[in-house]
Length: 112
Length: 113
Image (cartoon, rainbow over all chains, first blue to last red; front, side, top):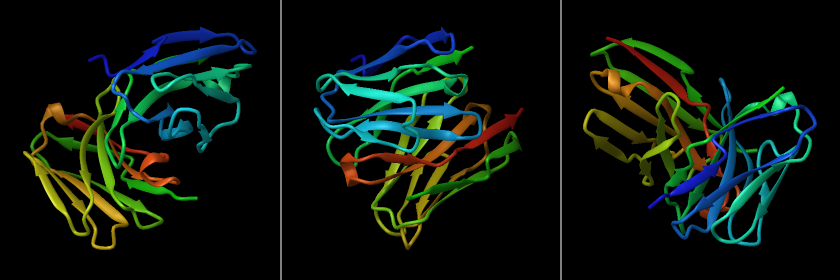
């Protein structure tokens, strides 16, 4: 099983450019999440999707949009990238109930 | 909003010394999870605690959930270089089990051989 797959692994953007981070899971999980990780800040939730067709804001949603395309896929879009969005982004998924979260390998994004 | 606070932020130990990280929530938690992230890696699930006062062990790691279900700790006995990484606690946020998962800021452990 691949688990949670994120693409791309690395990306450099210029300020103002847009891009979409892709995430797919093959574990038939209902819930999917996007986190960003910055030094000393831990993992901060950007958006999550408790089930197909629903999305909710997390702690730091400004500047981002998400799409739960189907049960497998949950994408994160930066419409106009800013240097403050330089970070490592992790996608995660969880099954039904209070189960463990599985994380993707992460996307290291630099906005210059 | 709900917060999960974790201390210390950093811990440097000599190999063989013990290590403890503490997690405190502003609200009662139905459960708490612990994750480990190796340098350059992604968080990996270690364990989940559900019951008040629960204690679980994994080899040299001991996890505790407080009686009030608002705090938790992870204790590593006789650290090894393989223990290096950042340890996170996480609790359920809004929406219960299908809602968000709130992480503490983590404790970064370094071990000097």
